[in-house]
Length: 173
Image (cartoon, rainbow, N blue to C red):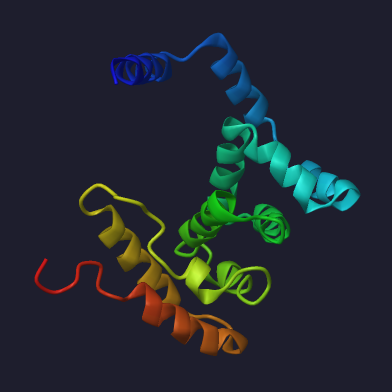
């Protein structure tokens, strides 16, 4: 038990102080381009590319941050990687696209039935958020979904809106 506590304390301390290698990895990750990843996927397939990204958390987090921007190329990266993802990688990709929803609702909705489901994208993309974060997201996503969207997205928009507007805190809590 003492060994476990000591190991945890060392991990926390190491995480608090960025190392040169952490800074170098971050610099390398920031140089990622969607086109490069899409070319890798085209030549190697999504599985090997996703495994390589997942094995480097800094790079994978950077990819998710870019997907959250709603940029069409990065959303295409999400769509292609999603076909080979499972568990944690799937949840991360789902949440990245869900965070893009308030910014680019049409682009996000077009991914439904194209690699993602309504349940994947039309959700609160947070695990234990700070007070107010999920509520602000819900208001922004709802407003985006109520805005003007092409008529071919009407059914999926309505379904998504139902899920996004589910009360965040059940009655009595």
